[in-house]
Length: 67
Image (cartoon, rainbow, N blue to C red):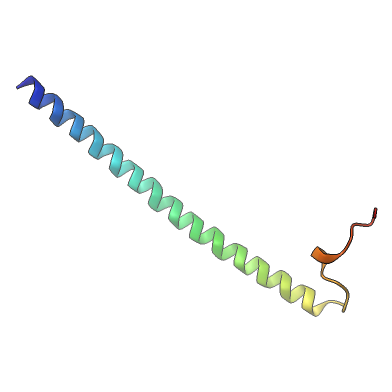
């Protein structure tokens, strides 16, 4: 009976760990979705700002002033 009890305890421990990891993955998925959405909004906002500005090169394509 000791061996069976040990196995049951081990299974219970593993089930708890799997549930905890599942919660972590779900939380990270929600956070990643939120961050991805925010980055997309920022990229769109920056593209609109560059388009509304002067007809110069976009900031990413300009050489730094020390060149």
